[in-house]
Image: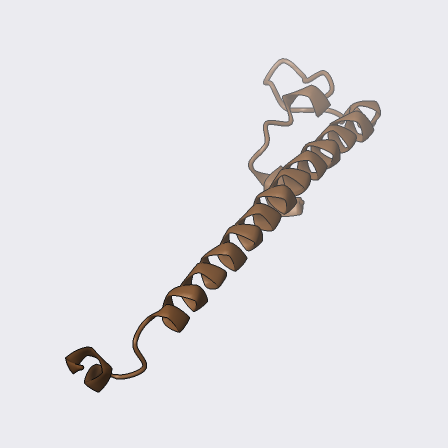
Length: 83
């Protein structure tokens, strides 16, 4: 989460600056909602990824079953093809 936050624009957290534009304070009251929003976003992404992984697992099991069925139906050796 920290790596994700490093790339964020934190202008909402900056307090008023002086005439030179140097930040004189940080608005910590904005930090909790910002972090909560990011946590909720990550939760939604994780849930979406979990669903995708589950679907891919089902697809992989289906492909493995199909492959096993083809292998069972195929001749055991090249000699069987000559008969």
